[in-house]
Image 1 (tube, chains in turn brown, orange):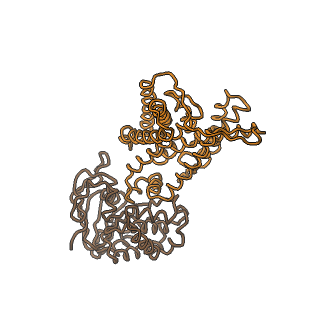
Image 2: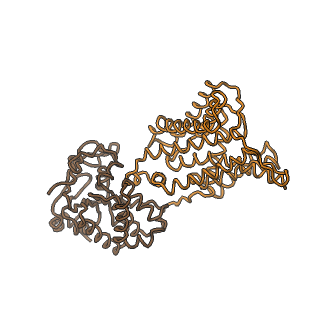
Image 3: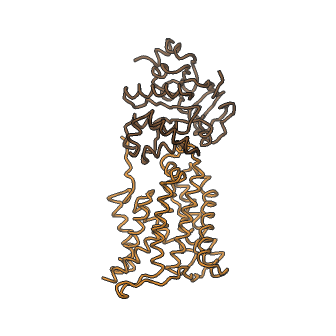
Length: 237
Length: 294
């Protein structure tokens, strides 16, 4: 399978702290790949480095065959990468509609944007109901849906998702993961970062386990689910 | 009664100038999270450009105003690029001190170029004044034009922010720079545009101010700048309608206290009211209540 994203020997520092240590992984076109690990393992940092929010010390991030490590973050959106950040980070003073349109900020094809807006409203009917509402008044689950819808408005080929289940009730968690599967089956490659390892492994094709900035395990998601180390460290209930 | 109305109208006019300046303060604060203390001195530069264009080159008033807006817009973007952009991510105190430095730089540059003597400024507004109530109330053309300009600026700016992509990008950057970047918004460019708009508005304010109070010196912009900053805080810094309301209220309070209490006490009264307001509503009239997370 052709890789859409491949990260090689990535090193990231926060001051003197070596947060990401020689991390390498790859994501094939059409896959769902998940990075799992405990709090502070470096999952979010990895995603933020890929989209240029945090500078890397060394390494390579190849997207569709080009090294994008030095490309400023804002330019990646028009190249097909969307990032749903940890904590959703929707614009809470703006309406749902304004948030969605900001997702399409880099696009100039009015008709395509209008179509995608309808597509997002179909996928998330609650956003249609609340489109004129100030985003700050939405529930956590609705805000997560908005963050995902906003990312889809840029028409991404690669979707990075950071802890979509964080702080959500179990009903919403199931719904969000169903939607991720659907987005993927429509042809969007997904790189998913999650603390909820069980859920993430259940929808992913492959997985990597991060521990204190290093990848310690990798493999088929189904196989990792049965791995005794993963079971005891991440799947115990 | 008629004198009260004319004091009130003059207050609204003075307040309109404050409001236009305050918009620049508040927009830059909202987006770059910095207090641009050099903003008042852009007003002075705007005044000098009009002075040079009309008295030395004999350009018509409207052309002089356009020159002034262009010069100030470019100046504002240049200052941002040279002085503030390298400090992105630095502590807010460093940025504040830099802004004060830029302010002194502009004042002293004007002092070197134009000398220390004040210049008399010919009003660029030349319309008949309006008489109401059988001549008891006279509204000067400057007063009227100032108020109308302020309304026009407010309408245009609100439309720009709500209806254009760049305007929405400004709101996004002001709320969350990281999330704005993830939308594909070029944060640095958006900040530069904000400085351009703020400085263009300062040029307009400079022309209006110098037309109503026709003297020009290197410190012309300082006091209106500080008053407008007060107006922005009064209305809630970061809020555009707040800057507008704050500016106009401040102008009215200042003018009425000059007329009925004491012209020397007007400034203490204005700042006193600000202090009292901030005691009860620390975020200003229209400012966002900052919620503390527990």
